[in-house]
Length: 354
Image (tube, rainbow, N blue to C red; front, side, top):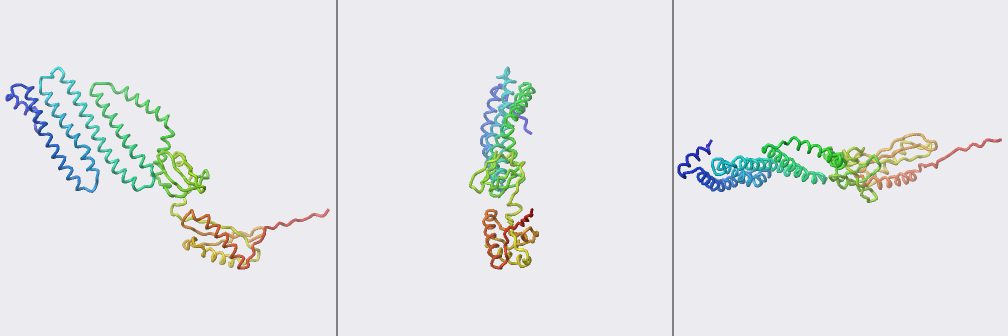
């Protein structure tokens, strides 16, 4: 390892005094530093272009000038410490330079983390339809920057022998006060994160909430979820509520939706014939799926009719309502064609003679 002080001691007899020696040495150092950092930057950029990830390219470009400043202040620190010109202010100047070095290091660490958030988070966000992650990535980057700025300033203050205990305690109290003030907003933000990570529903899914709202998820934002119902209205619900609500997702595990049609036939009808007629009617409907196949069950013997239930599947929730209506119509016409009676509700009335 090169001993900078030893080199300055060798140069000192040449220039006659330590101040001039330090100045000349620093100028030579800067002259050599400029091409050195440029060459180093070119080499690093060429190496990073050969890799598949863009993270190292961003790092090289964003850290290049800070590496130069860091090395520049290191050289200046040695030169001033060796010189006797500022002997009365040596400690003050050294502390200033050390403070700048600390801030450069803190900022460089932030840049490294920020690049990985930007690149890694961007890849994750591109795979989802939600906008919550698009909002969270800039928020995470700003939060990381704030944390490292505070971290760097606190270290600098401690370097200047300033008691940071009271300051940290004050920040803690302020943080608690702020958290109470924005607790609902934070609840919604974390609710949005929870929805994205759990994937309980996604943009485009058809869902039903325990409060009764039914519709298609239009957007999952940073604070709220937007649902379009079948009246073409947009319902905006806080993510904090959505994260804790009971949600039926008609799109999971797949988009298949089952509908049911209840009907009754006359007593004396053949149950097997009824099933055959109704299944044949359902299989002729275009949007009724062949797999799973439609079915009919004999549910019970009612007061005035034999009660059956027809079941069929569609592959899109949007088709369920109209297909059920079409199926009800087909069942009715098919039963009439097969001369299977559909009884009116009956009630026996007994008159008591006085």
